[in-house]
Length: 135
Image 1 (cartoon, helix red, strand yellow):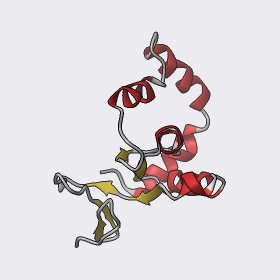
Image 2 (cartoon, rainbow, N blue to C red):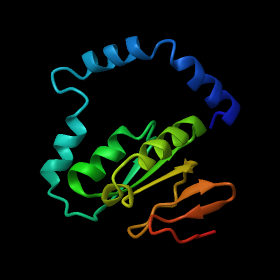
Image 3 (cartoon, rainbow, N blue to C red):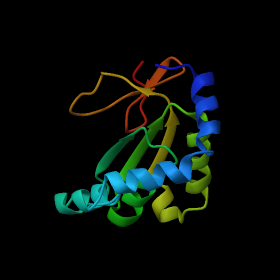
Image 4 (spheres, rainbow, N blue to C red):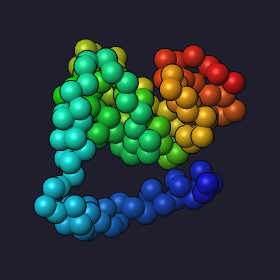
């Protein structure tokens, strides 16, 4: 795993190429486009309150949309602190009926997933999707 300093530096530099990168990414996903994930989730017919884990949530675009569009309870995890700051800022501007379904944490996903919980490593502790500390 790259250091937090490297990730923060890389994130700061990303803004210099972000527009061109996104254009290339959209082209590479053609003809489906970046909303393919949302179309896939729609076909799953998950009920409101179903849990989703957004690994590498970035700035929270999909996590917010999954909570808004489908009523999912979404836990976003990302190793870049600037991403989590943006996610939490967006969550703060989101209507409360959607915001209460969102949780964003700085951390790395560990290989400790069980059928009942996935854990995010954060400062030596782990938290399951239901918020319980596991170690």
